[in-house]
Image (cartoon, rainbow, N blue to C red; front, side, top):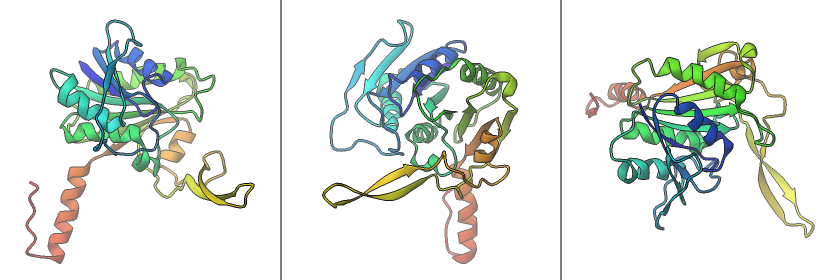
Length: 261
């Protein structure tokens, strides 16, 4: 198999190196990553300045890799349009440090890279580790859990128009309860703007991460299941949901013509 890898934590993140190490057991890996941290940029792309892809050798001589002064979505577009001779079998974005669950899916550059792959009709996956900080992080257990998950996934037929959002608990194998496919819990508002005053009396607003605070999770959805110790997989499928809504609109406006078959 052939893989194209990116991440929104930047090419020097230990999570990228951990993912590449796992993927080398399954096939050829190419890495195209932002040259610095790009968390929270969602599906933005660079339009009014040139992109530069710099060859780097951080994963060994057998892994072609580039650092790009752009977003994760830029990296996938550049990788598929220019830097690879043929389409990869799978695009994988990760391993992101910090869970990508609930509403975070819509803000995440890691998730956006997987979604961009699906626009190219390439299966995409976003993989995150439920760990708040990269300080003293060790990937021994996440790599072990991820290997078992990918071994199963790669034996299946992955759909080209579906991207998978995967979260791995930061737990040893014997404490992980298994793998569940669940919808995202978008009822949870993890981030909130708070007001801050500086010494001159000026008011600023800052995004506060409330993940460590007590929050109510809906049972059976990604937040709750990840906290219970499961690997969570949330499939995102734009085309089929679009078809469903178009059929609904056709009932409201009988003259609507649906271009999707």
